[in-house]
Length: 207
Image (cartoon, rainbow, N blue to C red; front, side, top):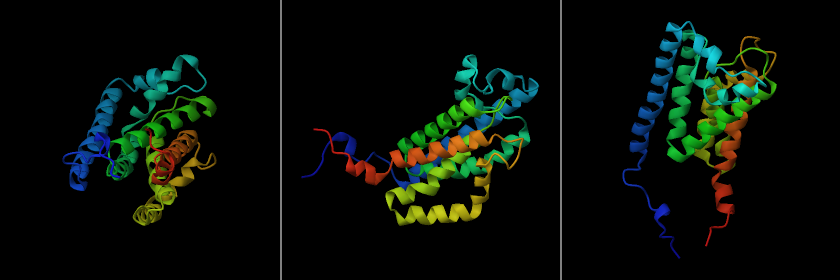
């Protein structure tokens, strides 16, 4: 018996090509926004970091979880995040809006929560937690889905960017937030598990 419910019908124009074009626009626009914020922040001598950067275990600053990835300590800091953010964000978006939003949100929130809970005494800023979250999502989703194309992509990405995973270790560098990296990676894995096609098939459809 076929399922003719409206939410099962393919959306008009929802093709790989359309998703690729939309993904470039969405991810590109987000990166442009980061650069505009950095230009403003630089003009203000990075005073925005003191106001909207994430302050661990500070109740007044818990809302900074929603703003700290938008800020960076310098233009060089932002530039180091730009290319992987574009690549990983675009590849995730190829699976659609819903997948992209959930993967990004899980990475964002998990990164911020871990920094807030166990971060050091300094203010944390930067989108690297998002980079780690999207990367970890791409690495593991194929194994959850048992999708060989996704697994092949994860192997290629691991060979090209696997070295960044050392950033989740507290002993690698004192000037980076390993907590943000680790939290983002946890969020990415959680999103991949939540969105697993095998898990979705295991959930009985509502009547």
